[in-house]
Image (cartoon, rainbow, N blue to C red; front, side):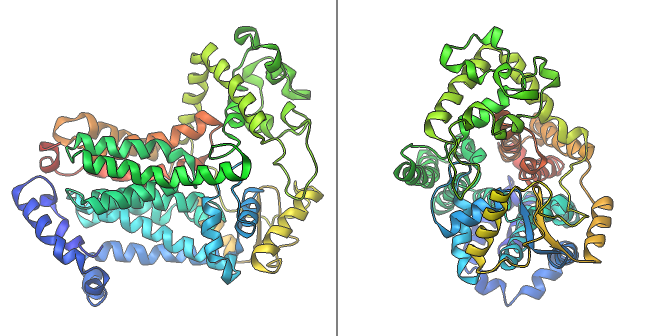
Length: 513
């Protein structure tokens, strides 16, 4: 935000005046926070609409922090991240980049601090959305409106209150694009920083991996030169390759996880027909009709969700399960993962249109319905879904990270775990029923961004990059496993920026890209 005053306005891109201002703004931007902090009152006055919105957005976050303590703990994923932060090691199911973040905060022994810091990061994401939209010529009220879903959507606030990887990955994703796009042309240092941030995001949520390649392609198309494109690619690859080397050293497989094949196999259970696939003998146990009990459903339309196939401990991948303190990891071996990947590739190759059908159908869900990612209104309890081994692990992970049970020993459920406090829980429940991002509104945002790509006078390479990136990170999780709105959230700020750029006054950027 320090150089925002010099960069915003209709001339921020394209016209001669705008380019001159951008070039001359660089020395002022270099002063950084030393220049910005003394002028903070002036900065607030110049961006008073966004400043008011930012201040108001703090209120529901305070309600969430007081009402749901010490944070909202999500299924076994939260405890995996906490356990890996204490016993620093790459997890076989999800990458452990977020656990490294938690490890850095471990000396404070506080989940409340983690949640508070994540809320600050969430507000920072909104500020980056505002800065980028202002950079491309929209007025302050329009840029504030573009940031509104990040500021006020209860699903976003819940993601910040989660002890989960999603928020940090979103921050790195949006931060990478902000560093890359806020100044034109981006310097070599900015390109490297953006690449590094994108690469680190992959070690947190692997769905951003294609963007490590997309950014250098964007730089080439914008004629930024091979040097900048190559630097971006190298910077993005270093964290990914470094993490994969760490994973190989611990687990013997050069990969981000040992779960990608198993997740994809579970996806194929939505459509797979082994009479069409004709798998070899060693893969027939992976067919839908070979699964236990009600999972062996012949009609794909009547089959259960993919996660039911993945986590059912009577299924093929769990048959050699061994006991241990950390539950739900025994199936995720390199051998099982490779076997599942072979079946999945065969299934998709034999039934490509069936695969595309289920992926397309689920990808459209967030547009047809309002999300169901909501704060709990009823106190979770250990009786709801956690068995003894899972409960022991959950309490052990929280205790190992914080040094105590954080008062949640009796407040853990299969879906969420938190200690709920009235009346703040009721306030948040009322809030999330009044303020939210409707599915049709999100569809309109996406369609506006898409229209901006095709309409000649409004077309920009920047908007195209952001829109394609939003679609990529939305579709990949569904294509790999199944739809959940938690995977859609990181796409919202990118889609809002793309739509806002499409609605700017014609000219400027569109004339030059």
